[in-house]
Image 1 (tube, one colour):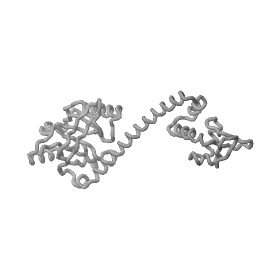
Image 2 (cartoon, helix red, strand yellow):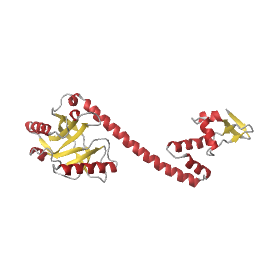
Image 3 (tube, helix red, strand yellow):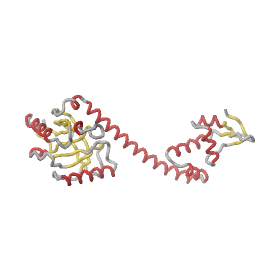
Image 4 (cartoon, helix red, strand yellow):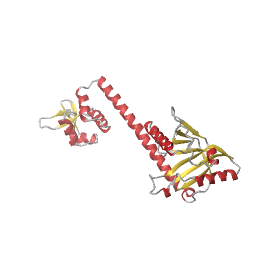
Length: 280
C-alpha cells in the first residue's frame, strides 16, 4: 500500500480513497480544480498521496459537509496561513454552533409531539372522554401573552397572532401548541370565553421573556373531546367536581391541545387537556 517515491511515503489513489472514506472520482475532481492534489505524480501520470494529507482531506470534507462551497475552500487553500486558518475555523465554528442549536430545537419539537401523541393513547384519555381525574403535575413554565380578561373576538385573534409571532421570532416554540388560561373567577361567573392569557409551554425557565410559572401540585383534569372552543360543559364538570370535594381551586384554569389538526382530520377528534390546581 505505502511506497517510497523520492523519500516521500506515498499511497496509491485507490488506497487513499478507501483510507479517507471517499472515491477516486472525488480525488481526481479535486486535483483537476486545484483544490487537493496528490503529493507525487509519476512519469506515467499515476497519483500518490502521503499519509499527512489525510488530515487536510478530512478537514476539506468537514467544511464541504457543513455547506461551504468548494470555491471558498479552494480560496483558502490557495492563500493558507495560520491567521487565515484561524479566521476560517472561527467562522465555520459559529455556523456549526448555530446549526446545532437549530437541530436541538427540532429535536425538542419532535420529542414534544411524540409525548402528546403518547398521552392521547392512554386509556384514561382516549376512552373515557370528559371524566375528571386528579393528576400530579411538576412545575411548568409558560410564555404568556399580555393580560386580556376579554371575550372580544378581534382582540383575542390579534393577541393570539402576536403571541405566536413573539414565540417564533424568539425561538421559543418547543412543539407545544399555544394554550389558554381562564381565571377561576371568570369560570365561576360562567364567562367561559373570557381569556386571561394565551401561553406556550417551554421546557426550561425562560430568561428575558414574559412568563408564568404553572405551580407544581395536584390538578383536577379533564380531557375534552371535540372542538377546542366548545369547552363550557367541561368547565362545568371541573367546577362541580372541585366543589363537591370541597377543594380550593387555584387562580387559573389551563387549556392546552393534546391532539389537534396536525394529528387528526376533524374537530370532533380533537383532544384538549383542561386542568385546575386544587388544594386538597
